[in-house]
Image (tube, rainbow, N blue to C red; front, side, top):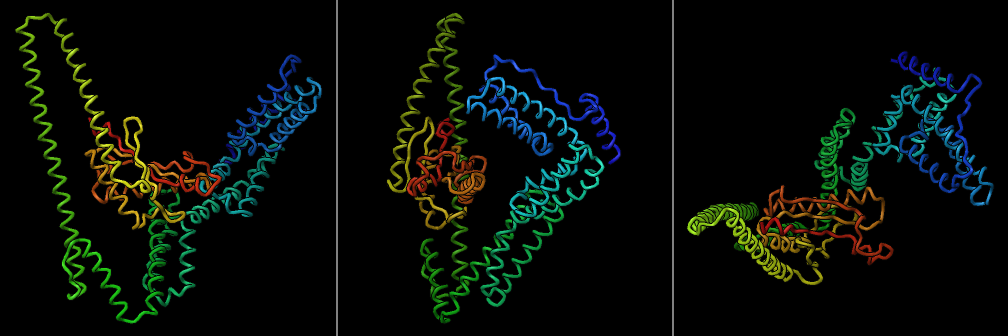
Length: 511
């Protein structure tokens, strides 16, 4: 493989020498037209160099690209200091010439050190740049490869390519593990420092195994993104669970046995009361738990029954509607026959009737939408949510929907609010619903975009789990900081921008 790349490089080099002459890197500089606009030519060179960056020319031919940028700087300086037009234009022409030379060497590099280039791209895609000095050291080594190619020293570039490629591959793996398992390791170490080996040995062992499994899988299958993330999420869940077990264990250390028993009893009793069950505190804890589980199962059965019943009624209504529509069509045909109207006249009559029906349907739809809008608006207190119309959609902006900092966990304080949203959605039957997540601009855009997506998805999963709608009717979208409602330069503005919007597509519901 190396020999083929060597031949390819030498062929390109031969063509290059033929075109430029044997005396060295002679440049073909385009002639300067004194009538050209200096500002336009500078802008043109800026655009050319910017496009070159997107194609990695500045990396694959750093020397020639840097020279091109140098001429751009000279042209800018000349324009700012009212230098001669011819001098400014000559600098832009020189900049283009050096950039063209950089592109020639970049093409040769893409064939000569393709393995190192690919390894570097994968490492950057995994976020290896965050690894600091180790990454920078490899960047220097990669630049040495491209510089060797610019100096027509292919042998040294090929000799060092494998080492550079392997270095980037190792950094890629480190970056993947750091991004997926870094938080798990921090949580695990913190809990061990807090005494997890003594207070929660079993949960600690489960967490360490989940971390070990994820680490091994990433090592062996670093490009199985979905499976890798699932294992990382499982390890993170276990580490967070360990933290909760530790917190509970610490709190129980200072409690008397009776206090622990009463705490457990009170938790079961609260759930039983909410489910409308009898006071079973005089019974065994296992019996109380079974009673709770039975009540939950009964509620789930009721919900399923109501859903199936509603579906059946919907089908029966649609069948009757189709039947009635058939009768109407039949009567119209009879009327047309009896009246002996021509086909054109009948078509015109039907169009008029159809237009009247559409107008009535539209007015009825608007009246119904306004009625439902008023009903939904009355479900929320002013400080809970803002309900407004957006074209044919209804938007519920959840003012009090708050998440822990940097997390997508729905806190119990939000269940009541989301319960009201469920009622609002069901008011429209089975509409399509879009859940939008938004953040302020604190932190990086990429992290905020992912966080807003995760929070919107958490709300979507909550609605699915509670039987609000089927999954295909619920869409979660994270916009990050892209759609602010207020300026992000104040705490109040940032708080407004951190929100969840629920958009009910009422048109699909009406149809």
